[in-house]
Image 1 (cartoon, rainbow, N blue to C red):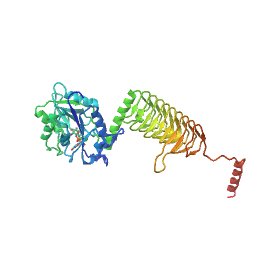
Image 2: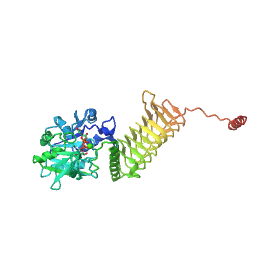
Image 3: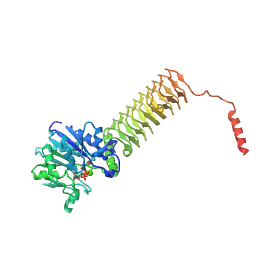
Image 4: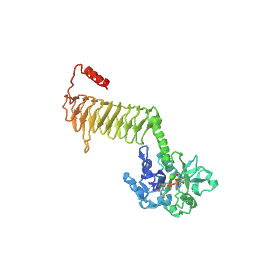
Length: 449
Ligand code: UD1
Ligand code: CA
């Protein structure tokens, strides 16, 4: 970034008791991605020098997932100010500004964080920028006390606020951007002489003003500063984020027939003129190219669908499914770690795993690739223009070469050469009038009872 050097500290040492979970709170997922990763991504777009994550003892593993970040341990949870203090040892002293974010506040937009950066670099050069929002119900939040309309001079936590201060509904969103030069001196001045017995980060605002430092306020929407403490709040944040993702997909030129039942992930890529029918779940790592139709009731994760293909209804694309152009993956077809080349089809009731399906090949109804022998996974290679008859098993490892045909009901255990016909089922016998004889015999046996 051009301008002052910025470092980011993400506070994530909270226990998250109200989640009632063995997973650290910030690793719970929203739109397929852990809460803290949302924050890392939004902060990352500001191109900071460093992203430091402050974790508690139970969350030590968090930063391992994010090699671009630095992790520090806050051994005891003594408050947000103390948490920031724990990051001092690893913070690059060259940083001019420090942006403090919360790991459990995943909906903050880079755009609004940029407004904080802009406010910090405005001509009056404030030393501290706080994030405010108008709360519908301010209960529980810190209240921002302003002077001269919008110059913040103090934050009073709800528990410590007077009845009169509790009437204020300008609340603290939690994020703060502070000059590195002053941040730690200010934190050192904080005390834990308050209702929670904690070292509050919020106290640095009043202390800064007392020292004659300048401050500024940037307003966020209430949705953006939503903090997640319980499963109920997680579900609410999910609904807010899904709405954002759906709108952005539609703005990008996709048709969502019933947006409310289209579930997306934060990293979902949907190109123009994609049509998504109702009740579709899209997990992480999915790319849907232009002019693809996803019919109702599909479940997709870590897969790519190239242009012109039609998926579903009721299809399941699992990790590693790469569907080429103009393919058809129909109802009750499951594809895992497999490539379909241009124009290939599996239209009904199949499992295709660890396979390659060549151009314009057709996988008949009920075909199963038997890819697992209980110990290892094996691959099935299907060439171009192959026809696999219905209800066949392809026992991997096996290769069906170009133009070959597998007769319906076959169990294929060895490779089939190009343009051959493989049949493994028993030959059909016909007993003339056998049907009628059987019926007579069976009916007289039943009548005797
Ligand atoms: C905080 C603010 C409050 C604001 C609200 C917005 C303080 C004192 N209060 O209150 O003004 O309105 O956020 O949601 O900052 N954390 C640590 N170590 C600690 C304590 C907290 O890492 O010792 C982390 C938590 O994991 C969390 C964040 O800091 O990510 C905020 O802590 P939390 O206890 O949720 O603060 P609030 O009471 O919500
Ligand atoms: Ca909180």
